[in-house]
Image 1 (cartoon, one colour):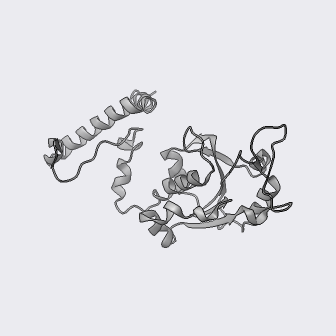
Image 2: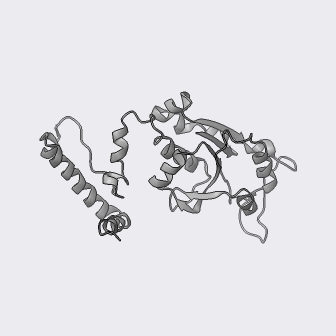
Image 3: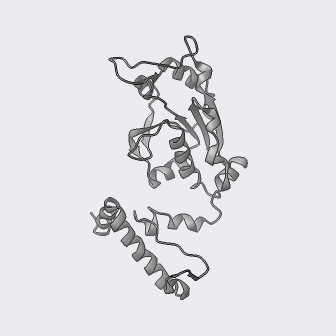
Length: 237
């Protein structure tokens, strides 16, 4: 996977993408990062933005600056599709399914907005897909870009040392949209808290059933929206 990041703050990267297993994958070339500094394409006295037409607060990144930056990109590394992504609160919410689909791509371009955003004509011309990492607003798209990349790269075969752990992630527990069950390690007794006895029983089916029950309970109480999806799937709706 080759990922190109367009940003006003290139020093933010690789950030969290340069540590632990994700950092190892970057070092080994499982995925590559190309960081494009938008300030290098500034116009009219070094400006990269302008006021919104029709009035309003803040500034928008200029379509001229963004087009120049996009035009500077080399041709796609393969004959496959180049995916253009714009992190935005109004986009489709990032999910495990979307992360899995992104992990199959070879060429991704992520445009990080700043200030009040970007000129909408760029989104239209380059067919950007808007994608959200949650119902909140960040100062820019850099943190969201790192979340998108990390969620996707960890699903590339070989990045996570124990592939079985991916099958027990939240949202994929038992191939259903459930949150992950609680996890425990040693010591068995810590202060007044104990590891649930079933996890020490060695009875694999009992452990599986306990974990599934815990996942159901946590999902039902903390994410009713996911619980409703789980129930609908169980009923075959």
